[in-house]
Image 1 (tube, rainbow, N blue to C red):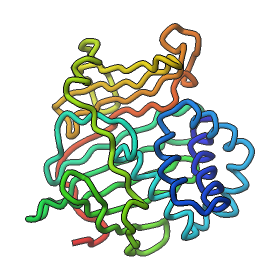
Image 2 (image 1 turned 30 degrees about the horizontal axis):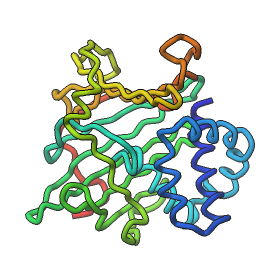
Image 3 (image 1 turned 180 degrees about the vertical axis):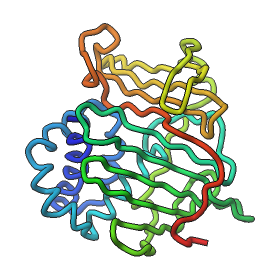
Image 4 (image 1 turned 30 degrees about the vertical axis):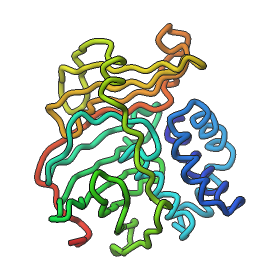
Length: 272
């Protein structure tokens, strides 16, 4: 179900962009991934259009789809356009991998990111790998970002069965900087400390939770400074989940857990 929803949501982005010809679709769509509406849309489209569009367009990696797919992957890796908490940065060579909680999936959808290099100018080379359990495809991206991740300057990609290649980067079209929450806001949303067990191990974390006053949906982070970036688990829960009104994995809009982390990451695409 969840794998089809994610896959269907990508297809929905593609269809919307082709029909409207509007670059703002990418920005709006990425921002909406943290909302309940996005998940519901993904589920519906996943059942109706996802398979057909996926076979006809997505698997061919058309130029239009590649642009949208890159936006989608960077959106998950760097919280593009959405709220995010990162309690500590990455040092060159450090990497983390998160796995999506999926029900009935054939495999694990995961995303990995690593800080490869920091230049003398303060720019940063990052690597992002994304494995889609629905399609079985692995995509590798390596991008050069301006200081403080403000702008994407350069981007290389490796698609399944293809050689690494350079992608054109237009200002504001591929990467949208995340919305950083203030220290005071984070402190106000901290509800306590919890010991969390994830595939990467057991961590003592700070639990941070925001609740939508309009819908009752929540955004939750479990933070530990022992890992790069600090995020051990991220949950976007549907309204009623905490009260037991929604059961199983269906109570989540999105749910990611830290699967592994470490040091020694290097370029796979010969970017520098």
